Length: 108
Image 1 (cartoon, rainbow, N blue to C red):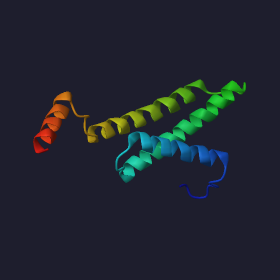
Image 2: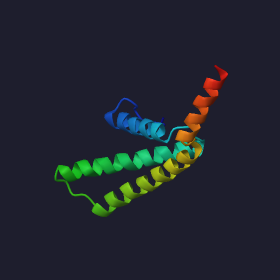
Image 3: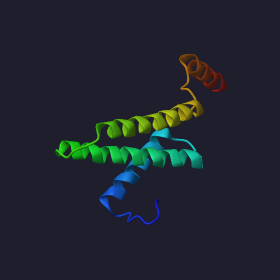
């Protein structure tokens, strides 16, 4: 996925898991731009998780950086999610289902 990165490390596995999870959430056929944005959001989320870990372990953390990272990742993922929602067909309404049933019964 990334050049010059040992894909067996726990960091690489976590990054890969984030990318897969975000791709599954967004769904559909992703463009290369979409894939790049997902990788960027995964990297930002990964970095934010590392900062959160440092915070919990009592290490000094730049709170502003943590907030910026999570906010930026959220904006990227929200934009991708909105695009994906527009591509998805809305679920059938009750009227659609009733019409489909009536048509199936008429054929039978």
